[in-house]
Image (cartoon, rainbow, N blue to C red; front, side):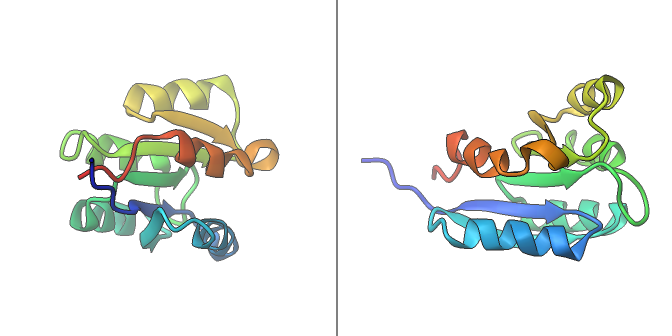
Length: 128
């Protein structure tokens, strides 16, 4: 029997309200653990590389910097981390840039916020 541990999630969003909404969403799921949050590109890169989460929920627009830069900095050093980009910039050019930089999923926060939970549930995270 394979042992499972909670999926370790790191939230990167410039809005504390969104961070709290996501934390509340995942607090109801025992198989998910929030291991950190960040609001800026520098905080995100340092926190993700320190915590080595299974998954990062990443906003495109940050207080200082952007999600694509976070992806470009972290992916080469931690290729196993799953990045799920959530943004209000749902245009195809943003989707292509994020996917090219290593994102696994790209969701529009305005219309697809509630899908985040289902995407996380569908990922094979938390295996030891």
